[in-house]
Image: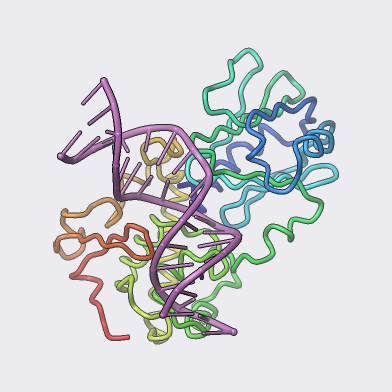
Length: 269
DNA sequence: AGAAATACCCGTACGC
DNA sequence: TGCGTACGGGTATTTC
């Protein structure tokens, strides 16, 4: 579940706790979390490096190390937590990084979907990602041009990380509702006004999510409050906050898709 | 070529 | 109680 706002919130929370800390030892409890290295290579190479600072790209959290980049993708259920060495490890911990000053970083991931890369060149992992939706160079014109270059349904296109980096199922449904665009609308049928509404919807929902420290859904990610402000996600059968119509749910590309049939009118194409 | 559908990885929660 | 199934992000593979 962690999408852009949740990853950024985790990154911000961890940065002051991790910056400048050296990795004394590594416990890899679930080696299949590693995406690009063998367990031995990973442990040997990472041990002794220091964490310089943290950043986010799309849904990836990047730790800039002395010699390498340590990248995490939290997928559905991953989380990163700093604990005192006196605290026990927990059930679904997959990786522990023991740090100076008697603390450790735990990568906890119930469903084991999360992945970890250690690489000297993060472009190997991040190279195909689309633009950052909150960056200045992501303008309505850029979005419109990218939409027009494709002939795809909006919902799966917005979930495609090579089209735009950071949106997942929740924020996509919310952004489309704000923009009053049907999830099955074809991307190349949007005019400049439609594209600008979508651009505003994407930016607004991400900023709202960030403002509330992300959304906490059941077992996935905790701490945020944005789940209390959903307009359509998870609200099938309830009233649309804008027009009062009953929110509907359909399946688009295997994904649950929530929308308001009053606000988001389906059109041809 | 590019869009769309399907399988896969997993544990949890839910319905019957 | 216990079984089957839906869910969800993203990649890989297959189909159209």
